[in-house]
Image (cartoon, rainbow, N blue to C red; front, side):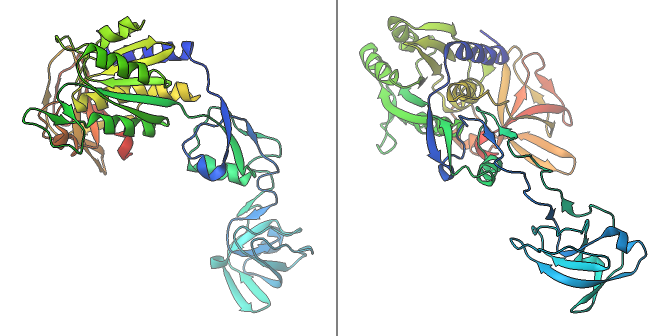
Length: 405
């Protein structure tokens, strides 16, 4: 049984060593949010392409405002997208808008709030002027040909805007990996079916597919399998047609926990079959038919936690990028904790942002099957295996829920 940190490192080590980056495809810019960039991107021109005003006001020569107040003749008006062919001379000013090009001769912009218009053609400046103020020089952000983004970069809204700025109407991205999701267990029924007295609806399929999509891959639901070797064999073979297979349930040590047995019959190699955490101890990671395979616990909160810790970094690597760090941040405990020693505990918690930082309070929670309690949380308090007892006011790490960031 591995500590969760070592289990996560083992997943990263194995997947990095055994999988290659996916192929690429060219996609319209408006459809690449969240995708992984598959090419280097350089500036197609200087950024900005001209000296740019970052305030509404007046473009002047700073030396002409050595003595305050100073008066200027207004000789032009320059809007964003316009230009002025002349040169600003001594005692002259151009009315200028944010984003407009600063005219030749001017070396400063005075905010309109710091001026007094004496007439339609005359303006007074009441504050000292510094050369270069409120001007972004040409090429200050990037020079033409300068590399801006490397392959493997995840495209967020900032990267999307940068790609647009350099004219990438289409961009090469790595193809999305397909992750098969399989729920196991005699007791589960489809969501739309009325459960029998001792049955439960299949929640794991939906939550796992959601986590796969959030991680940047394409979920492929291969259905449900009863706790029978033949049924599991058929469904697992179907799931192995994808780039990764994630199963839930059937990985404990009970008589009908058959997932590892069936995977072994298909030639699977296992790297670990238990992780020292609660919830989520019976988590399995292996390799089968050239694919990473994860067997996660059947209880839904256990499934969610182990997916975040173990599967998300594997999807990152399969997708052509480096694993994202876990969203762990420090928080102040609102209550005392006394947990079982020897296991790291991930306690569903409500995190509140206060003037003093994040405050964490466990939600009322009755175990790893309690989805009602889980739905009240926006993160997990992470109680280390070697320190089970904590006092109110102690600083402790919390894991933010990626879906609620």
